[in-house]
Length: 175
Image (cartoon, rainbow, N blue to C red):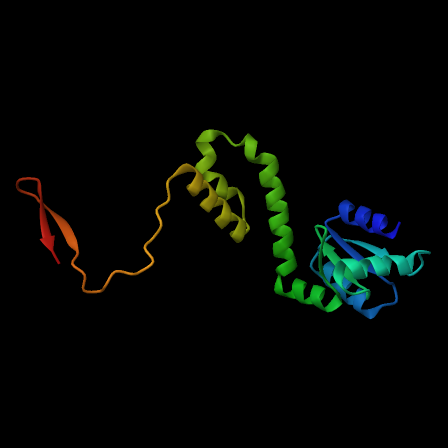
């Protein structure tokens, strides 16, 4: 029953906090999320009959039974200190940005006409996702040549081509 409650709660919202109303670390995590204007659902478990079972199930899932237990998109993020640090560093905002952009990409990828496929990376503002998508599109549409592992020697002979303006022919010269 406790595992079903947790699974239902995690499936219902992107950011879920399992907490107790009197806990200072829970208050710290919730205040940090509120300051960052992050929508979350808090479940106060101290008044529930299955409070001990919920905490035991959370211990199986996260390795600790203490509260708060903060989940982002169904994955455990951390407790009170980790959540406050994640908000202050912007890590949680980046995770949520990537989640929102990924969902938008999945829903809208079929709506992009073939002619606009090259500019679809401009739709996303999250840098790691934009980089991933642009590499994916390049690999899919073009043959990507791998760069050599070893750099060329500095004194290597390089050939340059100059155009002779008088007779419009190419002359090969060494530099």
